[in-house]
Image (tube, rainbow, N blue to C red; front, top):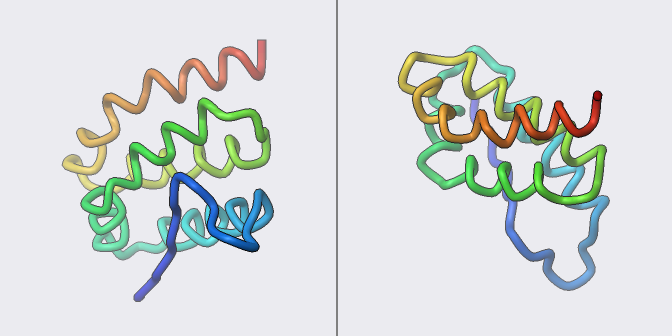
Amino acid sequence: MRARVELTGAPGPGSGAADGLAALRDLRKALASEDELVAQHAIDAGTIELLQAVLQGTCVDSQLEAAWCITNIAAGSSAHTEAEILTSQFLVTFYTLRYQ
């Protein structure tokens, strides 16, 4: 499966929260595939750091999608899980604050 999803720290002209949320949903769906290359490409592209930033944001829908993306990456190979270890603190904080 080939997937191309773009996430950036700052939205471009004419884009907004809806575009970012749509990109997160596309990424989540791509990461749900059984193709481990998708997760590896996401890791190599620095997506984990972007997902961490989304978890620290204020949009609950985007935070949920980012958390789902992180768990999809971590569910891959052991190398993917290892790449997510540092992100786990953000995920735990997100769930703790949202669901106390």
